[in-house]
Image (cartoon, rainbow, N blue to C red; front, top):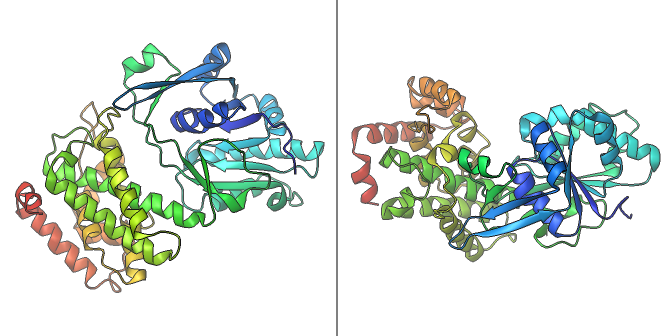
Length: 410
């Protein structure tokens, strides 16, 4: 099937990933990019300028000038519906909590497309760091579409693995240029090859994969896991550390984080035989550690480590890798060490405040780490006879020993 219009990509979400990654790829690939967003000021500025800059933060700073862009307010239902109806491809980059909010508008636009051409499919790139994103979006769309709408044949819900790191920008940077966005040089969008209904766009930076679940898990259980481990070990070693590159300058922490990532990589290697090689995963780990040490990104330990109820939850980066390790009957002690360190995490933002939910987490942890392991991490007290006592012993040691000397011995 040929797309409705070859040169228009409609992107829900003009935030950092939307602009620095998805919009940038499609604009540079020759598409007109239409952002749909709730930020009225941002939409007005996009329509006034029709361009913005992506500042690549590295040893040698680079400026990508992104052109042929405009915006539509999510509140302008008629206009947004019209844009959806005329899109050749779409993307969503709004965050988990906002997907249900945009689903009615998305459904309305899909129905408008259907009225014009009952056989014209459209692909929606799900630029969300969310496992089973396609199932979640499908569920929300079905809640807003009539029963006879052929969603499975007309809409390709394309899961992705978002590996691009985009730091929090300072107020002075935003005041200098409201539309500019910072990012790292990495520019590879891994996406689900099998999910496309139309031909995959031939633009630089798209990397379609056959077994998307394996690559989503690689992002979560190597990239996100390593990032979190760095933040949690770093904070416990020295609470005065601010940036994520600082702990990795400590040889003992670097070694421990690398070994933790490699332990998780071994679990993935057994879970997905034939998809990865030990060599490729080791190269990926070392590349990530190099990217984590990019001082020009200014990524903070607070940002990387906060939101403990989510990041230590059953299916997320650390506990999820441990559950998978149990399933694969492989060691997970180094991952558990990082998780227990996470329970001690108390980093604050630039105003000296913890995330409110992390304050709640600390109250749960005060009841004993067993409460965290069972209520947050999803470990069964009866089925994890060795796991929970082992974690309790480790937690006790971390409280009693000087962590600095312990990590230096690694």
